[in-house]
Length: 345
Image (cartoon, rainbow, N blue to C red; front, side, top):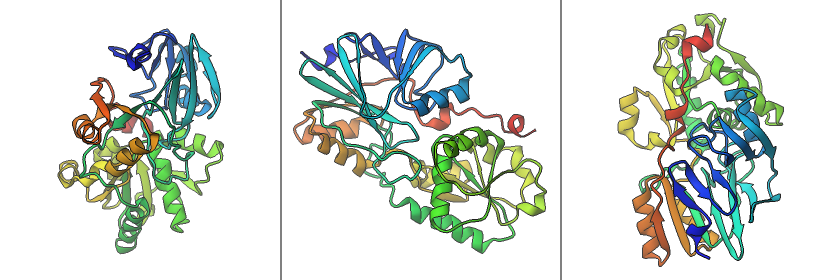
């Protein structure tokens, strides 16, 4: 049995013919297995969807009750059979409910990582290394230049700026699923107990996190606040909103952006970001390479990201490796289309 007889990249995504399903398909299919709720991986219109309860709930929040013909929730560590294939979900540490999917057929195990990170995150279940024969890894930050460092230090930079400029509002661009809630949790861990303000587009998912037991402290919506009262405050907003007319309601705002891409200063300058915060929900170069080694996989498939460098790293170490060249996946920002004025008026 060869790995590509079990999982094969096709136009719709990764296809498992023996199991009759696709993993994170980019177009509607009869049966989809979804790793997590970000919209480049979790799309509406499938006949049936298998995912964690949290991922199904995220899809329902974003797409409405009829986002799929039918749904089935699966827990971490639970094994189900689809066709002749057994699949098991394992924590990916990316966002709430995110999972790696272990696909086993006969004597071969392939693990599709989805998006993942090995850094500590109080808002989701920690990443779990899954031994396998073939590991399919993301490579969003698959270059040696990307070493994210400690997210707590980045939050300390934000708090130092708030203390230095008490007359200014601080606007932090962050993706509405995962990143925003992690930044809030990191602020609380540093002892920041003042209200954190939210753009209206952030409220639904953030309140959902709270309903799943993630403590985030006092949260308030920006809508209806007086401009002067927002001096010295921290507001979380979708990245698109921080360069929008919406920002005029804040007193002399400091624009920040929480992203692994803020390691690249040219990106920060291009976006007009005054305070870049290197906080990522993806594994950095060290995390990617350490994870590949820890799985014990003899073969590695690399997808959506900086594929070539990671493929080369694997081959130098004697691992069979190849890029998958899947299309339709990318940074969550590219798929998070939020009309700031629509959400706030």
